[in-house]
Image (tube, rainbow, N blue to C red):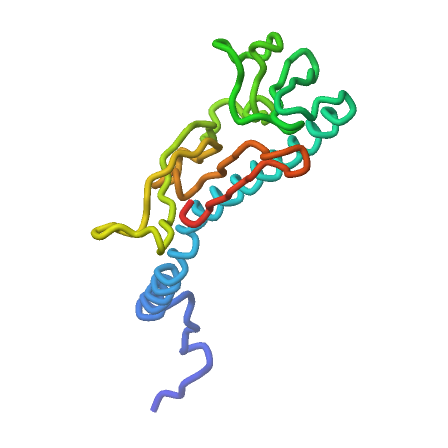
Length: 191
């Protein structure tokens, strides 16, 4: 009878085919469960960009208002000069609209509005424009057959990369008086 020695058994090297298949299946399952989280990051990124724009708008309002107070430009209409550009004011706060036909800030008659104070990168998907939004209709003023919302126009910053620009927007409305800052309405529900 032949006697077995330690040398007659070879040690296994590497993985068996079954072990390899099991590992690949487990990795596939993990990838399938984790993928939706990473796919949704674009919405979070657009929302974060819009929050950054909102911070820039608030800073621009505060700086322009401080300059308007120093220059006694808190009346219903006025202008300030920052650098070499003219900016339109309403009650001492940046105006929504640029003035004049040029609206390029070259002089007081063509002063820039709030969009001129916000410096966006070239090629940015953030634009300042007028857009249509849905506003809730007051329940007491409902009309038979009304769907519960009405169209309104707003001016502000929108993210053009969003599926619906109105749901990734920052509306800007002029100040009502020199004591009340402009109304900024953010809608980042579905960026």
